[in-house]
Length: 242
Image (cartoon, rainbow, N blue to C red; front, side):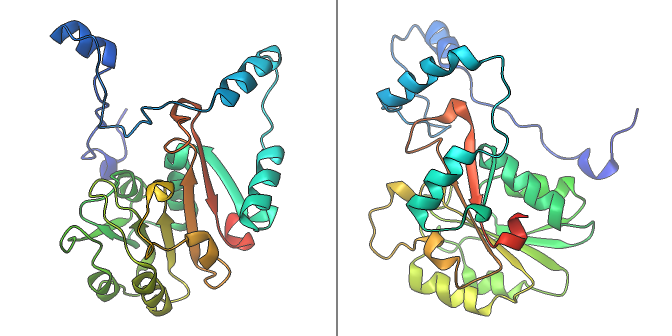
């Protein structure tokens, strides 16, 4: 059986070697794996308590609508409940975005050194990944704007950027969003937002009311130490989420 020709060249993701294997091979007692950006402090003890309480319900399907979580996030962010979508980590939401909005031959703009899942999912859909070189490790927003044409459908901004750790300041992001055509989606991936202390860093959630074409991604995997639970969420206009 032949696979789709446009995905044959895609690299296979190589996950990092398990910590226990490294300990055994190198005779180490303690190893911290940096590549996956896992929280070394772990999760809140309250999470462990909640999981233990849920063991009794392991035979029951989880709530596909995530009602309780949606209510909590809506209260926390001030958004409507209809503005949220969830995935198996942010990875699945990225895949859902590309599947829902990209047609073969359309273009998606991203940095050349950023989260690799953007490019792989764009190419899985038969679309074209337009990679723009970083400038001093930061997204070159002017160069990204220059790449927009009538085939452009989605632009990806990872803020802070993974793997460089740099940020796009609020003033520059707003100036960029003001120039992006309304029919082009901008996905603002804020997986590491909670770690930023720079006061010029924007809060993408606050920008949603001003930009209908903006989608913001967040996750519970990093700052909250819940990587194994795979809880990513996206926020955007109600029509986009629907």
